[in-house]
Length: 428
Image (tube, rainbow, N blue to C red; front, side):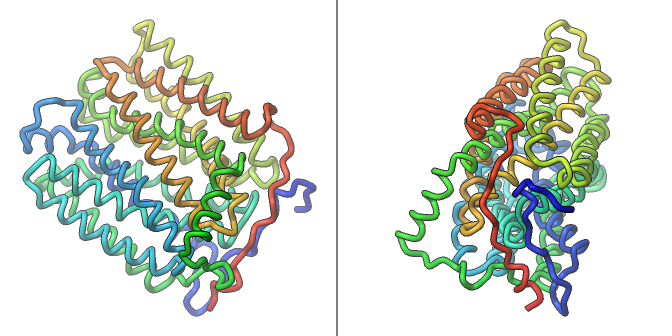
């Protein structure tokens, strides 16, 4: 469809060939790669109380550190993997990182110390950070609204993991010790590694391979950190991601302490995740017609409104399980519509250094989100109010960053640079 809005520009995408995947397989493979990260968080949730008891940790809030350590590793690791993927290519970095992911998962399952578990969880996240390169692969092949559509389709598949992962973790606990959850992570990582080995070609065009000289690295970092759109939208994603991490980390305590129905947590978690899945599907259907800014800015304002309503419900003592699930589902749907487009807009100006761009943006989002999520999570005292208030505050801060990116005007037309596609290399 013809459009005067430049953000519809796109590369042609994956070209089917003897080794390269077609569009549908590419979307599912990209989602599977990113799902290695989500699985290692969401499947842990039912096991957190069991792990704390087994490792003789007496403070319930400390279970959130198992999540925080992993996410912190994700943030730090992205700097390494993104940088070397711009030099050596996407494929070898993905395969190496997934190999380390499998090893770290096994070591997490073998530890007998809580401190050692946190250290290996950090290492596990460090290895899982390699899948940030998946975003670079998408950026190699697409730009503009088409990139937003591919990311949305990827998130639809990716979000099936939160639907199933807590139930999977609970099922493992019913038939085996908690350590076997980490063996499930290792098995899934090994399967994705094999799929990528057999079906994912190199997508980085040779002319855009960087030499790892100080001048090139500094130049690429300067481009990423000084572009207003890239930086501000990355920061907007970071604070909203922090609210999401707080929600994930607090779910076991909310259902144990507030609602006193811990067995229902996986099912209710899945219901809330359905909101994100529906929103991602909707975004994939309308983003090329409506545009990223109209959708994401509207979603952000709705996010602020819904979280404010949730905060009022919790403050007035009216919270029930059905209100929590309903309002949290709406909050997460708005998050999905906003964050997926914010991520695409943040990547748009940095196509020539997509690896470093994705790495720096991912590092800021993960580390910043982990800190914000940890702060909100520590406020839990037996009520859902800290979660709702944290989401509302994060929404307001995100709005400030969006206004800075858009020079004070929401929904305004924008003119990104034309992205570079390496699609022609996919079949080779």
